[in-house]
Length: 381
View 1 (cartoon, helix red, strand yellow):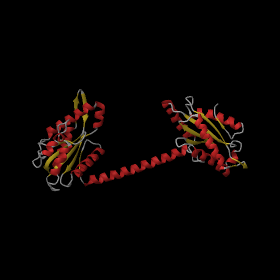
View 2 (cartoon, rainbow, N blue to C red; view 1 turned 180 degrees about the vertical axis):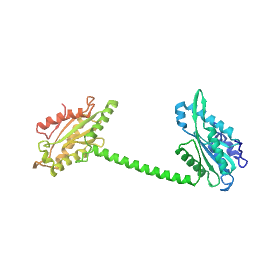
View 3 (tube, one colour; view 1 turned 60 degrees about the vertical axis):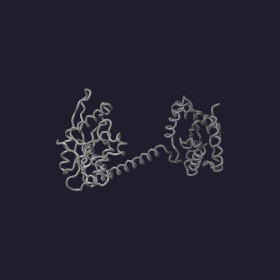
View 4 (cartoon, rainbow, N blue to C red; view 1 turned 120 degrees about the vertical axis):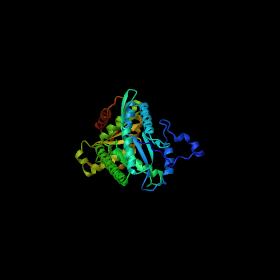
């Protein structure tokens, strides 16, 4: 390729740029920095007509540079960048004609020329830079993509760089290792891609919502709307792990509506369901915000009390029992008798690795109390 130079614009020297001269040169490659590129573009952008010979901005991006870093290491990656920059300097002459504009991205400014010549330059650059080379005994394959943007249709540097970025994005989306040229179709393509991305994002959000609904359906008791036994098992696993890791105590409280087993059919009537729901919601609303209540079975509820001992669980049981008594719910098997509850509390320990372990132990206490007439609070003595 013949050398191309700029005779139209150079970065003006002066006190301001002298103060920032360190920022105008890329330390690794010795090429001009993005700041230098922007300064050059500011001078060039308004000086040419939309048609005829115009300067061209070529954006050069290494395809798959991330894997090169991952496979060969950061130092090899830096050498790849340095070698690419050296090749660019050999192919392009003229001060401020070559730049490193990003991590693995370079820019070339070509002097005014017809578009077909700029595209020819891009194709030659793309072919010359796409090659394998050896570094420290490693054969590193490399290809590049090149985006071509002719100056003259934009009046702001940011708009010009955006055109280059979108053109490069399309080149990468179509497989890379190619030259792509900015035109109005790129904007249409970009808009379509954004619409597709927005549509996909909406679909993903809908799927997330559906998944959340399904998860809630699997972990909610339909009668009371409270978390069910599956949720209890998952939460217990977290509390047990936290106890092993941090030594924080937790307690388990079981609450059973008296007479459910003997009069199950009656408790499935409207009056019975209202009694069960009333007790469940009372349990849920009485415990602390840091605790959580669950519907384990028909008429049986559990509470996980984080950071609590048996004594604190007994206190929670007393409050629940008192509030249930105040509800004045009528027993479905005997309209004149109020609904009562039996409660059992224990502090969970390292022996309760599974939720079933702790439920089995506290259920034994609960059943013993029910067998003695119920309507009481029990705990290990």
